[in-house]
Length: 155
Image (cartoon, rainbow, N blue to C red; front, side, top):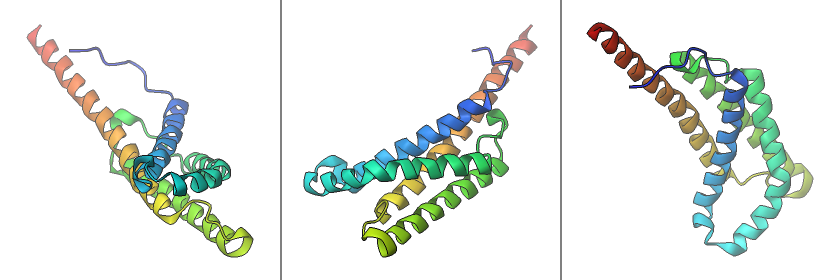
């Protein structure tokens, strides 16, 4: 069917893919929370807050992905260990975001860093997309490997 690549995907590509997934998940969370952007009065206020919060969000995600090495597994050999690592890293990042948000609300200016429903939705979507993307790549690899083995037997 297709030729499998000889080399693994560079880890830096996986790292930035994970960062992109987190950003995309945040967008999905806002879209779901604000009825796909049909509530303009609430959305305008939240987008003003997001201008500052986004940099904190992305910083927390980058730091936790880097420290937790969520990108370190070879994707075509994804296992439950990789899923566990992703779960731990994303959960840690979310807990940090909740802590920062709570501290900001109660001790700084009475505004949450990110609304709690946004954090919860982003958490679930990020976990789902990161784990499922790795499983899909593994399945594609296994299917390609099976096709290549069948071609070898036919020769």
